[in-house]
Length: 397
Image (cartoon, rainbow, N blue to C red; front, side, top):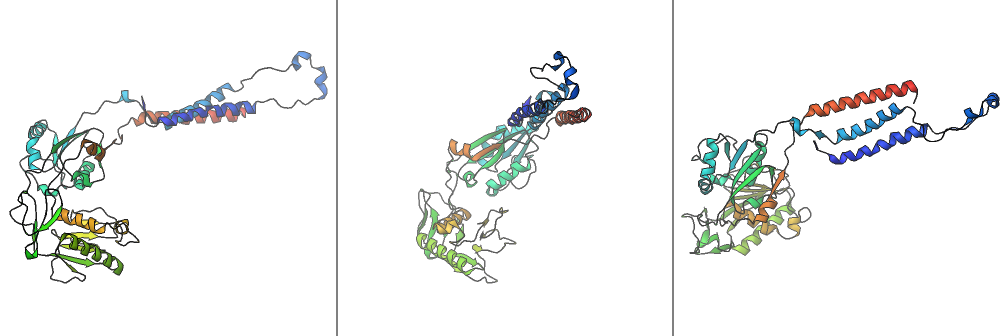
């Protein structure tokens, strides 16, 4: 037997309450003399010593009611009456070619056993062919958590196949079921090529070997770069705020970012119909976000549905945002800029301690508990209450 709320059993200690009340009602009253008292024999006037247990059945019923109520609140589960469910394994795989090749034997064996495999994407369709992989760039920790939540009722054991890099650390934590296995592939980044931006006046923006944002006329020869830049020309930025103080704050932060790293930011404070923007900072709702534009929406508290829309949850002013008050707004905007253009492709693996802290195991709600047992105990409790009331009314106790 297992108790889901074992602390509630302490309530059984309240059984002393009906016992105390029972004896309180039976305490000796005041003796009243009447005329014929003198004719009674002496032995009939001897006082009884000790404790009399009148209405013993009523006392037992009341005590049993208290104990049974505490037992019901502790939510008993009779595990011996239920069969353990068959283990159904589900495999969630990050759509990375190196990861899929590294665990190909495990994944192909799972397909042969009839176990379900899913790519970690917005779709929850099972995989039939491992060679048909979606775009690996769509992987986010938000998509991972959504996939786990979507499939949480369809498995008893979860197998996660992930690349161990800093992308996992972008989430504060990832909730997983209690029965899960983690298959990590540490990638040093040697197979990846770095992105870079080619701005005006022959300036190139990239991340050096120390993961520092650098602006130089030539590329670092010790770093492998893509054949073409991820962006050419100046960065077109639009500030579209309704409040003048917020617009001024964000404008000052962007100018500081541009001066420190030598970024060619062309900032506009008024939208024009034909201009295409690379970066839009606004406090207005984004109806149809462009795929290649980075949006920073302030004053909104929402979960992003696409990776290029970031919600701050509060207006970006010193009075409302701790980020601005602490002077970290330019740094934070720089991190968003690097992430959007993928200027930090040198992933570092998380330590074992960081991984253990990131994945939080939560017990799945037990929907298949033997409710009939608890319903039967509740029926007994109702019968005890009815019997106690019937006896108490008959004997006026």
